[in-house]
Image 1 (cartoon, rainbow, N blue to C red):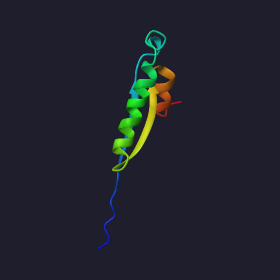
Image 2 (tube, helix red, strand yellow):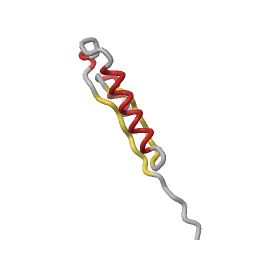
Image 3 (spheres, one colour):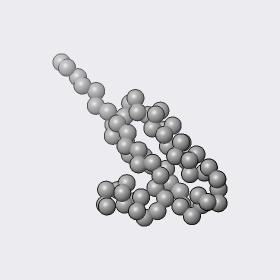
Image 4 (tube, rainbow, N blue to C red):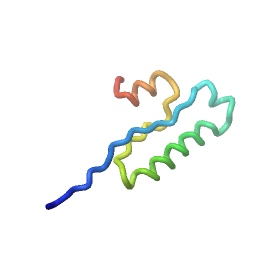
Length: 67
């Protein structure tokens, strides 16, 4: 019997508050990099959808497919 391995489908995003980016230099980039690191770790075993940074209403609607 031919058994096909089915990968899990995983959605991830990094979260933050847009108002902080000017106050904390490099924070946004660091959080995005953490998300990419997690994506890379699990992508061998799962189909990963990384929506990167969700930090305001527009980006949250985009990640949720509402825009």
